Amino acid sequence: MRNSNVAPGARPPVTPSSSAPGRDSRRHAISGAGYALALTVAVLSACTEDRASAAYDPFGGADTAGGDGAAADPEALTPILTIRSVTLKCGGSCGGDFAARCDDDVAVFCHDGSIVCDDCAATSRTCTAGDGDPKCLRAGEGEEICTGDGCFTRICEPLATWCERGAVHRCDDTGQFEEVNECQLGLDCRDAQCLPAQPYAVILFDTSDSMNWMPNDDDPPPGIIDYPACDDPNAPQTRIGIAKAAFSKLFSDPRYQGFAFALMRFPQILDAGAKARCMAGSYLPENTVTGHSGVFTTGAWFDAALHEVLVVPFPNDATGNQKVLASWLDFNEEIDIDDTVCTAHADCPGGLCTAPGGQGKCRYLLDPELRAALGATPLGTTLFYAGEYFRKFVVREGQPCQLDADCLTTTQFCVEGRCHDPNRFCRRRSVVVFSDGADTASLQPFYDPVVQARRLRAGLSCATESDCGRGFGCDDGTCQKLEGGCGVSASCDRSTSKFAKATELGSDRLRDANGDPFEVTVHVVDVSGSFGTWGDNRGMSEYGGGLFVSPELASPDTLFEGLRGVIDWKDADFCDD
Image (cartoon, rainbow, N blue to C red; front, side, top):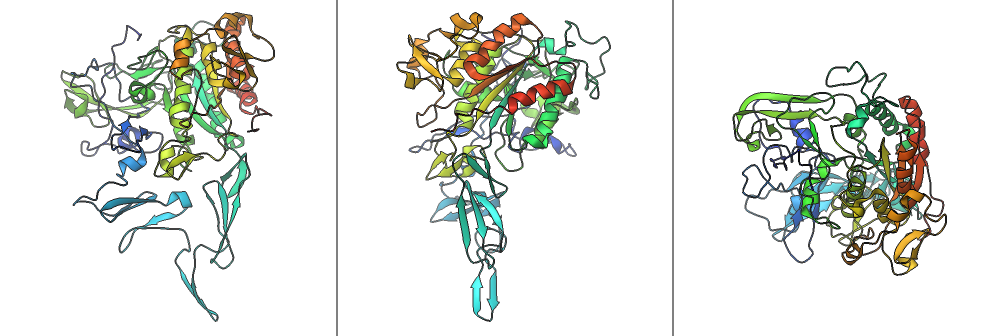
């Protein structure tokens, strides 16, 4: 059930097409370009052209407080953003207006009446256009070299090294041969080296109202700095200000450049009509994402509304996502309202109309910011969303593909038409729950934070011990810790809850497209300073197989040190499959 104070959101177009002359080009970058601004998601069918796809707009543009979102509502639009091969129409027919081209790192051309997509990036090549069809070439490739012994054509730049689908490749000193060194299990190829498999960590950031308060106090600071900073970036006083500074330090620390981070918040939608203000900025809080339906499964509603909780996804190219992460934590929010009169969101490409159905103005969010809106603490529900993000869009093992980019991360590759991660069983995946309080908005027992943590790490119902994750056994039909019993007495009843229907629907444990289970460890960083809250939240880490830490929130530095302990944690028995 949605927060009754907020109407279900309309869905305006989010794909930038045209804009008013002279409009700041950043609008297009915010609403459509780049991996973090347009997560390409779809369900491919190997036997049909029908493809279920979903939109992704982390800036909240696709769901707003204006419009009822009903099918008959002209403001309701189901936006479509598909995976790369679908966008390029790979395998489709070459129409009369088809033009061969380089589409970033993909060579697109026509062969025997069908569109061919050559994935240059998959072999560390660059798409090169010229006479005839575009080609995938790497530096030095194709050069003709003549010596006293004759002429030959180079296949690579002498002594160059590169990564290619998990292996280190090295060109010999003549440019005629390449050597291949497969990285051992547990190692990824990055920067032409075999390095420890890149860990994936979702930061689940508490954006409830209490995050606007001072540490160890139930009130905001006596003097609020004006919007958009709403705090002192150099010496933050609020809980959210201190946390943003600490996480910003974490994301930029060179010691953690080998990590892949994603950033989630509690559900929020963009407020199209309200004036941006402290402390909520441009956002309205929700307890669930738009269209949340069904108890144990997610469908198209989740795909379309993922941006309401996931503001920065994992990177899917070598450029990383550090700059985008920083933009959400920099104490700045930039909005542009122009003089274009609008009556619908469609009148504002890439933006929103401040008065849909009336006479409004076009409003554009150019620089987003993480805000603590005046909302509750839906920890369990948001943890469920984090698990579904991993299940549907991160662990793509076995999903159909045509290009590496279809697999949505840099560590999965398209091999014989299916996504594959060479370190699928050796990759650490975690959710770091950062909160200053306990759950206050669980819909029902299935969304209890302890239940969801157990689902992510071990599974819920079981018939035998093999149905449960490492360190858990099957006890009276539920996955329970083999050692330590309940661990936290307050969590015992919740941890043994049974969900028969969840088992029937396959929602009792995270599994990939091949049906193989995978684990997501849940860590908890609790800054409530309350023993009562610690008891509630510790259960998440107990059943999530992770750590529980309660660092001081005195300054960004003290919180940063607490975060390091969680991020540095390693499960010694993890890579044993």
